[in-house]
Length: 229
Ligand code: ATP
Image 1: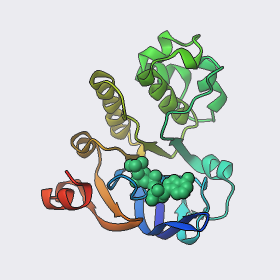
Image 2: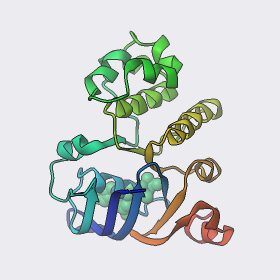
Image 3: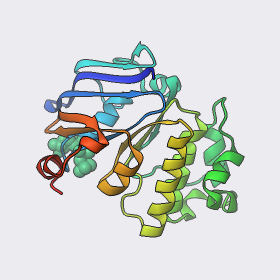
Image 4: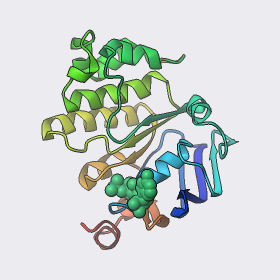
């Protein structure tokens, strides 16, 4: 498997405050990797830095063989990073179908394929995005990212705050994408579901990678120490 994303000793700041001190992480083609850690440890910051929504202030990030540090965020996205940000942002005043089509880039994903994945988006194609339920908005945010035909799908807390039945639907969809060979980087707090889908885990604490390995090597001890579960 060839390497798609590689972070080495990544550092990042919010103004004068340093939030990342040394994040090491990599994702290969076809692989699903979980980025884990307790609240405030730097998961969202890592994802924002990968997308260059926050500038890299140390270390290096390589995506698809290119150093992305210093690139504009839209150029990084164009290279093939499909971000589903925390808070499931969609265009509220566009319809479901418009939200999907404005994101479209050449590739195998189409409206029909997104509707196969999330039939509710097909049923609600003409509805304004702000009239959707939270779960449907999350599906739309994932659908939008897929319409860009990303080489890497990045999911930040995609199941947070959703009803159990909707969470299951989203986990099933993520598992299906993984089976199809989609590379995925995922942040989520529900450990059991995460471990069912991902190949490897990266644990961070205070903005630094403290452990990484295959999911089956994530012992209760490690989970207790770094995730507090
Ligand atoms: P959570 O699971 O709670 O979302 P997280 O692991 O994603 O946590 P981050 O949101 O990346 O953590 O936060 C990492 C650190 O950066 C925290 O100390 C946080 O207070 C700080 N931080 C996050 N956003 C900002 C910001 N906009 N300005 C200043 N500091 C920030």
